Length: 321
Length: 281
Image 1: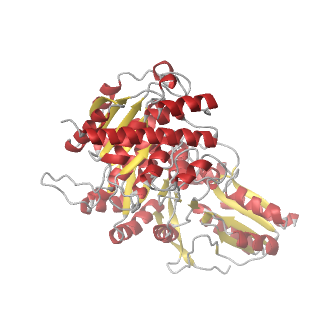
Image 2: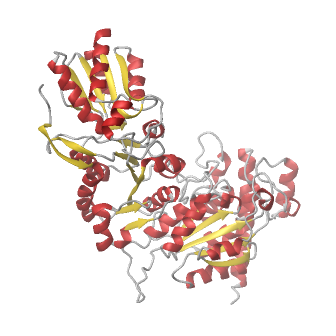
Image 3: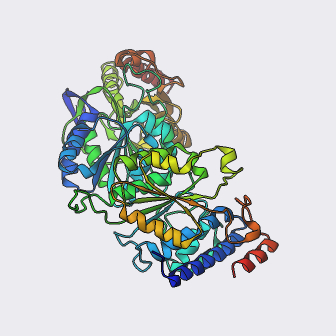
């Protein structure tokens, strides 16, 4: 299977939050408008360094997510570039209105880091596993929503968000994930990355599920099914052009996410394809259920989002063509 | 020390103008929040026409003082003060609350002079806190090591909206970070949408609550300009903690027959209009 931009074999395992901070150390030293705000959350390498060198650019407001988001909006009003850090479930679940009203409504330059986003937060259970953040945030006007797949794309995305003026939310998964991309891969907000160029079917993946999607594409390639694998790292604004092209050229799309398919990436892709009626869309993701405790492999198995499930979904879709 | 009589007279005159203009706006929009708009009018007048550093000719001046009206539905007297100060043409009043209007039914940042888009209650104090903290970043420090803020932030908080938990999240954080350029003025007009504040959710005692959270707290008559100016002046002198001014106000203050009634939201009838204009002459 010929791969674009991908390390062979895959590289170092690393948590996205760590990768984010490695990049933020440099960014926050260079850009004195960056302010790091936390809701009783680990401050990370960038926060710890900034605390020493510029303590007036680091604030932890305690377990108070609503105040966290609105205070950040006020700081943006005062001309700064705040990044907020707290669990996704509480940023979106407890401060939804603040994201909507105080940040997105006025296009204030606040970056909301959705820590431990998605379903694949091992051990913590259903109260903490955020399955609906994509659906909830996708419906808010003015807000960009991005979801990197690995440490390299996390870094590139963090840099891009500093450069982009306007509100954005960044999904950061909990588990360590393999490094998929080579350092030189071209990253552009709003532009899906084609990892493979097949035309039998398309897999559109977002976030940390990309390594599973890659494994599925490899399995299928060995069976003779050539899959086009797209990394939809920008969920909003979604790369419509690439989705429509994939629908027309491959006729079968399988979406992959660690999030509810209702309003999730699956929903977003289905909305586009439905208007063109050129392909089937099968949605691999969380099927209207809450999460539970378990390891990452156990959760993938139980919720049918493993590489095997992705490959099976593609086989069924190709059969229907 | 008593303030100059001429200044007090000027502010009283401005407060009348903004109440009158607010009435015209509500008539144009056929709906509005006369009660809460009038209860805060004297405080708004004291801030906009005297106490705050700002310049309608240089609206984006980086070190301007900020006015954040957290009870943002009470927008009419705020718009009227900004229009009177010269931020925009009073022509805009005519389209208030209508399709395509600049003056939306809750304060929005698209309006010249407005710093905060409200409407969702309980959030403005957090926004004001963020603005106030931003004013201290990189600021020179005085001999005690305290950052000297580039500007002050004044936040009008409703008594009803203080039911919202987020108000108290902001109160705790402002104390923790010693944000002494943040001045919250609680428009304690004793009413909220559906009833008296006391009947809906009794939050007594107001003063002790803010004090217990570590704020420099005073209690004043929110319609007495001397008291308003003195409290604002004192807030500048106390360093190291945020300031709360609990202003006892009267809902719909300014038109005697409307006062102490819960005229919260609605239109102003022809009869009410005549009465209001007579009282506000």
